[in-house]
Amino acid sequence: MKLPSNKDTIYAQAHEAVGAFQFDESVVAVFPDMISRSVPGYQTILTGIGELTKLHAKPDTRLYDLGCSLGAATLTMLRATDDISGCSIFALDNSQAMINRAQEYLHAFHHDTPVELHCADICEFEIKNASVVVINFTLQFIDPQAREALLKRIYEGLVPGGVLILSEKIHFDDEALQKSIEHMHWQFKRANGYSELEISQKRSSLENVLISDSEQEHLQRLKSAGFDSAGIWFQAYNFASFLAIKS
Ligand code: GEK
Image: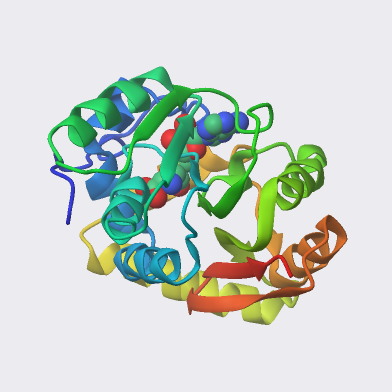
């Protein structure tokens, strides 16, 4: 199910000075359009989150959507837990504007699994008795120094057999590879109607806000957090989703 959205034109006009990107009201109004025209494979990842949830969610456990924005992943997890008794979903975001709108969408969708929406920092919220934890394109906005501690807390909060689904924009340490794959991403944005001005202003606004890691850094960090099994289950250009399983 696609969430309704206005067209993203935030960077269509030249800004005198491009400020740091913020998840405010103006972004909330266009968010589903923005993310699906900017992140290759976004819808496929949402579908995959549903499938992986069906496979790994256990009765009487919690599921978490950390950095839920408008709740797109929460909705796919809700559908996937229809037949699993005693599950509850905790969806968190530290943008009040996102949480308010997510609340409206979730209200309009009938479901049996209870959902708690919280305006909270994912680095501080308690994670326990979890069978599925999703972080869909949010770790990249967390202070790099705080990332390992967050993953460790997630690992500790998972039940045996529980999984973390982590999607991120990644970079490549090899310069030639990085250049070519970044080109593919910009072509994807052009094909989706973004102008050169929009692409370059958005890029400036995300500088020092979205800090990516490489595939190797992610895998190393997941291992240090305690996960024995971890790997990429989906990748489109420089956007990848990892599955990590607690044995
Ligand atoms: C989706 N998962 O559609 N604590 C809580 N939330 C945070 C924090 C934090 N410390 N930092 C950033 N956020 C969604 C898409 S968007 C990805 C996630 C993107 C929130 C922020 O407010 C925003 O809503 C979200 O993380 C990132 O499947 O815009 O590229």
